[in-house]
Length: 221
Ligand SMILES: N[C@@H](CCC(=O)N[C@@H](CS)C(=O)NCC(=O)O)C(=O)O
Image (tube, rainbow, N blue to C red; front, top):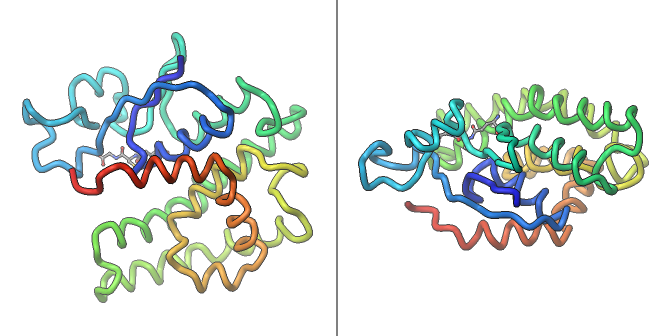
């Protein structure tokens, strides 16, 4: 059975959403971000990204990781590409060419979008969104997102989904990376194709199931 290491309040959310989409049975092993703990190396600390047991599994010291049979994998977006390819169906590529496009859009999300969107969500996580520094960070991140938003807005012109005519792993991966910027409603209002598309993605039952599980997880640890 697939094992997912992580918590819903982390980038593991992407993998939990994917597992729901594919209807996979999975086991979840809670691993917290070390930064959320006062003393992650304390003997009584819950399993976290700095724990020796987790380091033995993932030397990158980040969540999520998965174990699937003999395979151990890290990197949320790559894990989702693997799960899509392994389990097939509409979320994966129908052809080698489609597969190439799913990879292209995923790499684009990781390299062009996430460095900016993550700065926004971390500013909110740290409660700094109303501070001068926080406002500047968010403004700079929105500026960095202008080209990626323009590119995605044009890709979605006249289409419902990013690759092919159906929801795929590319939609899921990009929607999760863009979720980190969703507090910036002006940005989404200025890009109606993206706004409607992310609403379609987030209306999916599997997304809602992931969010329901996430809501049950404590914020304070
Ligand atoms: N590119 C990696 C990034 C993983 C990552 O940064 N995960 C964060 C949680 S969202 C983490 O584990 N941080 C370690 C920590 O805060 O101690 C992925 O997408 O899986």
